[in-house]
Length: 256
Image (cartoon, rainbow, N blue to C red; front, side, top):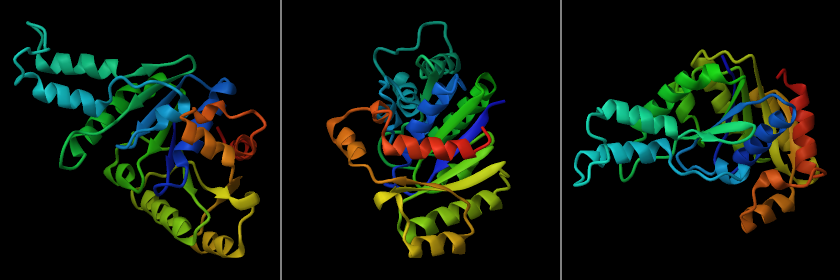
């Protein structure tokens, strides 16, 4: 069964960037093959990793929902809708050299993501035994944790910016993990985008108040911002990038 690493935090703190670099680092350490899971309805982990996504689970769900209404039904004669769905969901797995990737995506229009969350849960349960590691980039907030979408969770990495509100948000996620009886083997906090890689006293105080285990601090790096603006994959950052160096030091502290 895969060692599941769940990366969570509120929106806009850079968790997807760190998640992509974590996947790359594990591949470089010959920990693969890795199953990279973009469980965010607003999917962009593939952009960090530099891979193309042809179809998400949400896209396929919409295709199947419209299949029987279409004039040119894409379901081949003699194939059941269930078998067609299974075939399409299997094809949603993106295969790269050292990792495979599954993207949840979203359904169209109004409504919640309950159905596509269920699809993701089913696919992860089916795939978890085929990989030594599964790295999950969760959507902002606590949705997948509260819904029990993840098959298990051995390592929980909470990502925050330097603000007290950010620390408070991940503190709530940490408490939810405990309330849901997920019992990860290890759980810790990464503070991202710290000016000069240094935390101020107010942030340190809030981390203590929330009872969080600080794994490390990742400095603000304008090169990450430039790569994002230029549409370049973050995993192409130079090897001497301070973000890379900080993340490697953090991962070394984890029992992976």
